[in-house]
Amino acid sequence: MEWIYLLIAGILETGWAVGLKYSDGLTKFYPMVFTVITLILSMYLLEKALRTLPVGTAYAVWTGIGIIGTTVLGVVLFNESMNLPRIFFIGLIAVGIGGLKLVSA
Image (cartoon, rainbow, N blue to C red; front, side, top):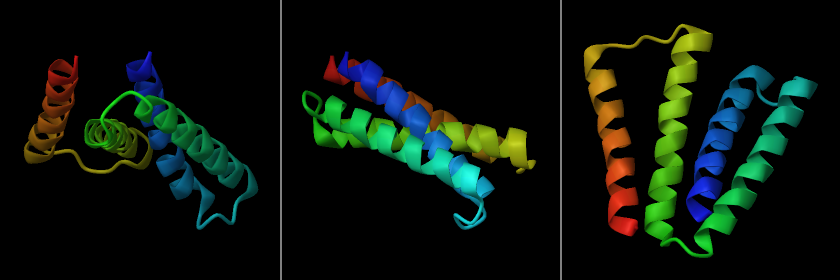
């Protein structure tokens, strides 16, 4: 169950990171509310995962999911560039997350 908490926490991290972009320095009300709610939920679920997972592993996976999700949403929502080296290194992060899951099982 802790891995599910961690996965959802990572996805929510992506939400609050993108929410920060939309909130324009936390000056737009609804994007700011979305950002704060997803931040709180992400931290709560990360804390639940940390009850049983090693802190280094959980933090690496949480940030990795956030990096991958934020990068994908940056390309889709904000027309950020995506090139081969960027895809390669994002792929390395994904492989690292999978590796951490395997060795933590």
